[in-house]
Every structure is written in structure tokens, then in C-alpha cells.
Length: 219
Image (tube, rainbow, N blue to C red):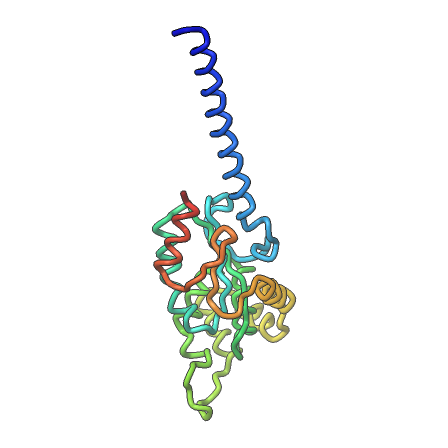
């Protein structure tokens, strides 16, 4: 191989290497811009979360505990988490839109304080027909005694029921719930559940679309 050919080969390899490095840093920059940490309205330090903090993908769900779709989709979210064990972090935010949303969110926050947020969420979803206002229910339907029901649920979960009852009565977590609502509104959330995957909003609500968006980010 002649000297000129060797020089040209070295130059070509240098250009290719520079292009690869440049592409890597560009992709890293784009990915970093997508990270939810870039927008504080997506993830707050005190939000309930499931999965490792350093997971490659962070899924943020804005939900209403009284939302029937949220309850129906809850097991799907947990299944997706299990299918990607250790690679996804789930963060829950509140978007109260129903009559009993506020006391329910206070119940969940009181459970979070006692280390039982996820069992409490599962129980509220499972028993939603007992305490939630259902779509299409007759206007004359009797109203449930929310404080008494939630105190009973607290006892079932082994929580300090007195603290839970006091949190609901005093609306103790009103500021946090209202902050979540404002954050959601600033992000364009108008219905529940609404999902963001590494900062990218799920355009169409379905299990297939959520899984697809997660797979894109895992790549």
C-alpha cells in the first residue's frame, strides 16, 4: 500500500470515528432532554414510586383514585412493570376529577407515609364500587360514608386508622394534591389515566401503545 493511500485511509477512519462519536453525543443529548428530570412538573421527589430510581425508563401516571379506567388499567400497569423487572420506574401523580377523589388521595398519602401505598392503591381500586361515584348511577343512589369506609380499609391494611381518619378529616395532603393537579394541567393532562414515558406523552391510551413507547425508550 502506497504512502498516499495509507494517509487517505487514516483520514477516512478519522472522519468515520468522528461521525460515530458525534452521533453518540447527539443521541445522548436528545435522550437527556427527554428525561423526566428535565421537567420538574413530571416527577416530584415526594411522589409515590415503584421500581429503581436509576431505571432506564420512568413512566409517570397521572391518575384519579375514583377513575374507573384507572382502576381497570391498574393490573395492566403492574403486569408491564413485572415484564420489565428492574428496567422501569413508575411514578404516580394525582389528577382529582371526581367527587371523592380528594379523600381517596388523602387516604393513599396517609398509607404512603406508613409504607403501604401500593397495597392501599390496589385495595381502593378493587373496592371502588363501594366508595366511588359510578358513571350512570341513579341520582337517588345513597351516598357512601367515605370516612367510615376508609377507616375500615385502613384497619384491613394494618394501618394506623386514627392517623388515616385524621388525614382525611383535615385534608392534610391538600397542598401536595393541588400541586399535582397544577403540574398535570401545565402538561396538558385533562383526563385520567394519562401517561408519560421518559417525558414523552402517550398519545393514545392503550396497553399496546404504552408497551410500544416503553420499548422505544428501552432501546
